[in-house]
Image (cartoon, rainbow, N blue to C red; front, side, top):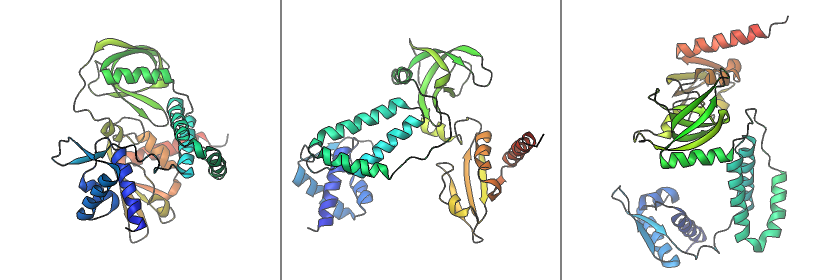
Length: 328
């Protein structure tokens, strides 16, 4: 057996043990870019080398396989580059105020080091050298820390479908009110938000975690809307402003085209490179203010083709900024 194929079999064993839902033959074909027959042989080789595979029940009428074995511990190696990426991710979370998530990543790092303690001294030296040549760029944005106890409280309410109550300070008016809400999920961006609905609003809306005080979980339960999809809700907005989505078309000139063609403005965007060297990016999202704030950073290299509403909004915003900065 070739070395590359042996490496693929070990990689497949790791994937089969690291998945909760199991892998199908089609998953193996896709992940390892092999034919169905080769995928079946590799699955059989994993079972021969590491023990019997477990069949996982599923609703798609396909067989899902998972591996439960302790034989992989001595074969799975965590690289210095992977540990460095873990440290970078932890630092990025800390910078955005998500201390709880950063602490969880640091615990993962500690556990990884514990199971590989025999090489720890050498690896710490290698990792220190790697971290010296890798850094995290400073990104402007809100740096308010998120209360870890509040996050845990909200998670409990979300998972048990129980109402929450808190005092809320509105950012726009500064007024404080008492809110009783049905919590549906948490969204993290430049700020952390609770997605929740109240009695006088049919659709869920966003509530800043930093605006909450004296939060508590109530014994009262609510019936969660089974049709609600948190990911789809998040994709409705360009950032975190929830407005009625609009169809956006942006055209970037030839100077910005190389950057724009690889830039993700929205997860569901489409990008088209034209013969004249320009690039068109299309997506559907709400949040006109946030879209305009971002487009200003592209200057004259971008033109709003659609909708006219966004074009006018950007023009008004730029005119207001220009008037504000006129010499006295």
